[in-house]
Image (cartoon, rainbow over all chains, first blue to last red):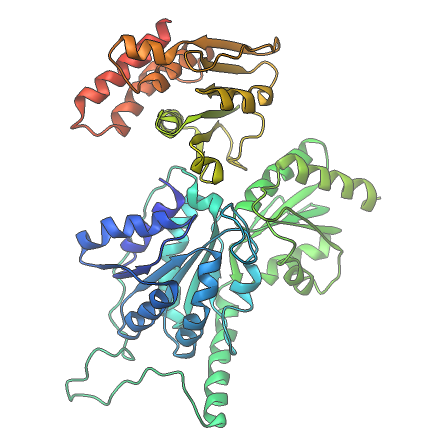
Length: 348
Length: 176
């Protein structure tokens, strides 16, 4: 299955009942899959008139307590950011998929990772964050989509799957795990009060600054809990590593091959692959900085995650960067060459 | 062991399908597999290619830079990919459609008039699978059992005629 299709199937199995989309390469297979699948499982598929309409449909569906999803690629996600901010301001759970392509502007349609800042720092206006997951294989496209729905409900916040054109378009074997039906306990949802309880109000407008401040402070208390509970990373050969290579998503696959290549040449390299990007798995980096001598961050961008690595390690070790951008995919040989250069110049 | 395979031709020749068949064979043989199509501007221009990796280790990049094996089914694909084949690698060329001759002596190149053979045997559109048959014979990376199982898996069971045609095409390529 293609990564896009695996993600869509996993979403359906996780109880997604409403999908609203608007076509854009390289994520259109998600919409196409949902168009076929949703009517057969009692769900709703709707191709909206624009990305903005689609995200606002998610806003409405989420307010009524239904598991809802939208997907797009980079330029379309920019359009959705107003709606994402409203959803966060109302503490609503939903899943937003970004199958990244090159930017800025219309950019290109080839795989890219240049929306890291957008996803983790600037998903829209206002004081808020989203959960951000970074799958690295077709299997993880499925597994993390499923998990994102559960976590979004648990913390009542929007969750983003930050994928890219490579993972969306490629096929790999995938198996789907059984998923328990989502619990029906959304007491806050607007589903009709039948004169039996007070109205539920879903709203992000607070005209009194003190009330808005209180709601933001309350939300950030929740973020502190999320940061404690949710920080996923894969560590590979890190224990004795002098050089920690790091990257997320598709870039981590290439980094891993390069680490294996370096080990074959006797260079002690290891890999940290963040699986959640917000919260950023600082713990893994802080621990590695105790023993490793230098970090190498590999991305399909001009370098966006590199700042978070410096913060997570409190700048105790140098953090080097290697990336290709605009839709160009770095090769294993290029990354290995960077590791060799660092080993030669910086490890004495 | 890792086999990196590049398939290329015009849209409509079944390039993506042939790649899928190879990936399925790898999966049935319990190997790690990946399949990556082109979806970029070249696709809009009518040419089409895809990359397949079969490996005993987890696959890093699914992008194939220097393939062990290529299948090329038109002139532009031949020109683009023939020089990328690893020394000692294999090239399977549909010479009904590719006039240019291979001049590399460090690879195993096989010219098969696959489109002609498909036409002669009433298998229009089967040239891709004929080349796969030849690939199986010359490289041995896939077993005949796995290819048959893969075709039965991918082609819908209700299209029994198509399954038969594909199996026939494999045999024609294998015996050529």
